[in-house]
Structure formats: structure tokens, C-alpha cells
Amino acid sequence: MIVGFETADDAGVYALGDGRALVQTVDIFAPIVDEPYDWGRIAAANALSDVYAMGATPMTALQYLAWPRDELSFDLAGEVLLGGMDVMAEAGCTVVGGHSIDGPEPHYGFAVTGLAETNLIKTNSGARAGEALVLTKPLGIGIISTAIKHARCPAALAATAIEIMVGLNQAAGAAATAHNASAVTDVTGFGLLGHLREMCRASGVGASVQYSRVPVIDGVAELLIEGMWAGGSQRNLESLESEIDSSLEDDQLRILVDAQTSGGLLVSLPPEEVEGFLSDLAGAAVIGSITAGHEITVLP
Image (cartoon, rainbow, N blue to C red; front, side, top):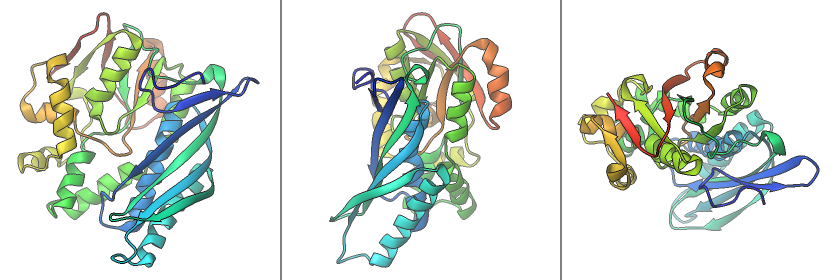
């Protein structure tokens, strides 16, 4: 094992001894949208994201389903599975089997195995002072998911969020490899600042983030004003408050710690690679830089 638990990385990496390595991860969660097919698609894209973040190509997957058979139709379960299988097929990843159980609440997800050249593995521990921080998807998924749960989300905004979540990080991972990224992680449950903190700790560096440069889904700020704020995101904020030097308004900071599902990649890039990376990947944005020291500073 050449990447394990020590740096809170996205996946485990096991060297095969021939210049290649297996990259392995697992992600399972409860529904966050209303349509079962969309939930299945999101679950698959979310599970694949860790493999792309490590610079690997997904090869095989095992799916897991917990289903309350006495309360929900198996037809709905079939739609969930179809969504997951469709996204796995899009990624060229072979689903080799899985496991299902009776459960009080539906849960779905995948264990994914990827393959990579050992010398091209990306981790969260290589960021260097002076490099650019790039984010490849906009924030706000957790806030939108909370609004969907409370039937407070406009249909068009929900549809936008779903399309963002089902979008694979395949191109982003390839761009990170092509442009010599020093460190990569995907932005999921700990929010942007939580995953940035992990990268900084693992790399022994600090960071500066400029809020005005961070892409945010249109309509998220209005939902936040209406109180659409998840408990997991609140825990993210509480765990980070003492470690961040921030002059932001409260709601701006909440967006930066919003728990994402199937979010984008956070990439530390040498300055000379930034232009090429942005050219290859529409929607990516430079949001700050890696700094010396250990502090994370957040500017308006």
C-alpha cells in the first residue's frame, strides 16, 4: 500500500509492482434528489470522482443497495440501479456485481477500483507554495439539496444541480495529469475549505482563497437567506472556525464550507500550467494560491 489513511486522501493506492497501481474507494449515501434515476446517476458519478482525483482510470465497480422492501416498490429500486449503471457505462467502468440488503432507509453506492501508472498517481500532499488553486465545479450543491428536501427549490435550479452532480470529473482528472498538478482532491462532504485544509495539512503549506473568484451556482445565495442550510455543513463550519483567517460575511463563509455531493476537483497547479489547464477545462476557475506557512486566509 503506497497511499493509505495517513493524509486523508481520496482513495487507497496499492502498487502492483510492475509500474502500475490499483486505486480503490467506496461511497454510499441516502437519496438527495427526488427522482430515483437521478439519484443512481449521482451516486455513480460521486463514487468515480475519487478515482479521477487520484489520476486513475476506473476499471471495475461493485454496487451496494439497501432497500426498505415493505415500503418502497422494487420498480423504484430498478430505476436507481439503471441510473448508476448508465453513468458507469459512460465512464467505461465495468460493474462486476454487488450486494443488496433490506434496510429501514434506501442507500446506494459503489466500491470502485481504478488503475494508474504509479508515477502518475495524484495525492493531496504535494502542493507547493506559489502554486495556483483551481476549482473545477461551482459550489452550492449542499444548499440546493437541502432546499429540495424541504420542497423549497425551484425546479430549474434543481435540474442545474443534478446536471452538475452527474457530470464526471474524468476530464478534470485528465487535465490535472496533463498539466502536472502537484496535488489534487475532490470537493465533497467537508466542503471546499474542509478539503483544502486536508490538502494543506498533508502538504505542510497554507493557502489563500479569494471568495469573489469562487464559482457558485446562481440562486444558491437566495436559498441560504431562506435558511436552506444542512447540519453537516454547520459541523464543517464549526470545525474550521478556529483555523481560518476570514473577513467574509457569514453567508459567504457558509458557501465555502457547504457539503458537496459529486463536487469538482480542487487542484494545485504550477503557475506555468494554469493557462493550459483552464483552456482544457471549461468552467474551471483560479480561486487562490498556495502559501508558505500553515494558515488558510479567506479574502472577499
